[in-house]
Length: 207
Image 1 (cartoon, one colour):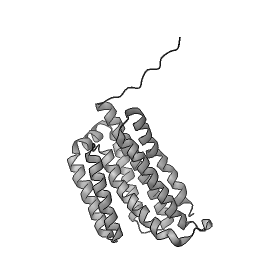
Image 2 (image 1 turned 180 degrees about the vertical axis):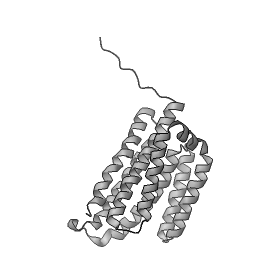
Image 3 (image 1 turned 90 degrees about the vertical axis):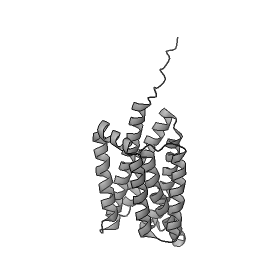
Image 4 (image 1 turned 90 degrees about the horizontal axis):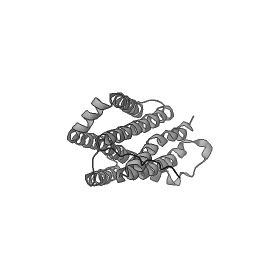
């Protein structure tokens, strides 16, 4: 049962693949930034959750470090992924990402867990209000994907905060949060392609 915590990381391939595809087609630096950041987050999450799998018999000496890195990177990635999905453009994207990430790291070092939740809600609310036109376009133009994204986000946080079996519900958290990220990045790609289309180069026939 504990292996589910590791196996469900395979669903991270959905957003990771979308980032890579977006960068391949559009050559937007934000996508390749998200690609590497997501990989770092998944790697440290695997390191941390390996301590929950008894069969692996992992040395517990570094567990507190991996716990901190997993919590910090996961929280910061949620914010950065939101900035990416609502199309915050550079350099503002990198400035607000660094500000949010460093702030979260400080809060985690002092174990201010309640303030972390309030901070994330505040940042998402402010940025969401500023980028309301993008959210509105998603809802109007891509209402099916938008609806699936909102449903996935709801179930992600339901499983995260639900006071039940950790292994079971946290595994579902992995599934829904990765799906939410993939759908959000897909919305960004589709809207960018509609507003600023980039055509694939036509293949030349050899003589």
